[in-house]
Image (cartoon, rainbow, N blue to C red; front, side, top):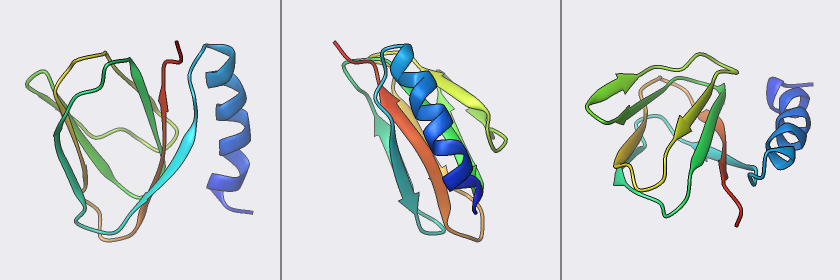
Length: 95
């Protein structure tokens, strides 16, 4: 069983209890999501691979299993900087 299969149900339950959705995103090496904003708070957690997140003038390299909070309306970018596919969870605050 992969880390994704082990972690996703636990994280999804936790995030839903905190009012967030939870979905799985899969990016090929080199994928870049540049300069995004959302109307609501977002959570991100890397399950496999290596992501780089940039927001508020700071660059983050979250470890696998580390939760990152992105406040609503904050300009941010997500990049797969590893040489393999990246799998990560994302969730938005539900209203």
